[in-house]
Amino acid sequence: MQVLVVGAGVIGLAVGRAAALNGHDVIIAESEGQIGTGISSRNSEVIHAGIYYPTGSLRARHCVHGRRMLYEFCASHGVSRKKYGKLIVATKEPEITKIEALLKQANINGVEGMRMIDGAAAKKLEPALSCLAALHSPETGIVDSHGFMLALQGDIEDRGGSIALLTPIIGLAPAGGGWEVRYGGAEPGSLVVDAVVNAAGLNAQALARATENYPAARVPKLVLAKGNYFQYDGRPVFSRLIYPAPVDGGLGTHVTLDLAGRMRFGPDIEWIDALGENAYDVDPHRADSFYASIRNYFPALADGALTPDYCGIRPKLSGRGEPPVDFVLDGPAEHGLPGLVHLFGIESPGLTSALSIAEDVVARLTK
Image (cartoon, rainbow, N blue to C red; front, side, top):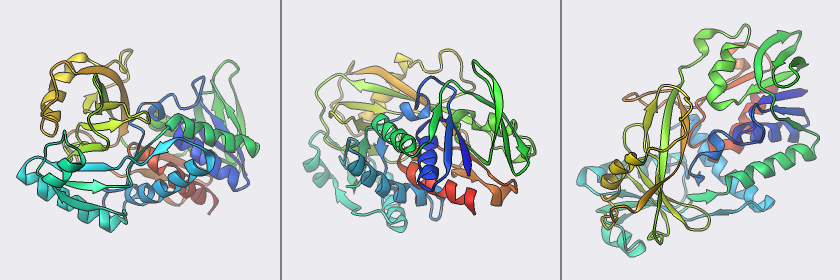
């Protein structure tokens, strides 16, 4: 079977690899001039343990399974990663109940090694930390996302697959038992393939609407949530990732570390209407709200210690004040069109979940 995957981000590359490993001919079409320039290059690179996600959800299943697969993949392919561990902290009494609920959910989801510790034990682990209690997650880590994507690309190409850069996909139409794929670029045209996977990220809804016979009612709304990160201008004071108790729409302004140990804070949540010309600029004034939030658990944060770093935009399926929506993997069993899977809302923990999602997608294509 010839499979065309739209989008060469981490999800598209993982799907392409899984299809190639299953003996299929793979083409990945990417509108940009290199792989991984969108959501996949603008995130915290956190390997999530699988704590937060509702029982039985795709997020819960794919995060836990995908995390285990990711650590194994990194070990076998020489991709840099580090298990820093994470503390989810309660700085107020009501937040203790929140993190206790997270522990219960983590255990239901099968997350290994989770434990509650009191404020004194947390401070012993992280002397700069101030909290009443904390939930310790030893399985949380950081991965070199670009190294991961290059390794995925290598596996695809080793098995005869190819990546077509600067090739935007502008429409899909049924063609016999397969799909006619219309593409733009320097030499626009079309080709017919047996199956298509839409892993276009922020453009997934647009491509779904440009898919003939795909019901418009199945295309979920796209909500753009910008997350800004700020670099800490000083020597790192934490050796683990530090997360506050969750907030509406996200996991709160937390401490992340890169593989060199450098420390940054973010992301916040900035709801935006469109991907304008300056969508990826970080407003320095947003640091004002960071200071107050961070000082709840890091009271020694000095004025002026934060400088703008970068931002990412998450393709959410729910907006401000709405409950989170699960990943959507819409395949033939759901919509009735053979050889087609649309992926919507693959945000965090998409990086962690990529290898597991890829297995699921290829299974949906071949059932």
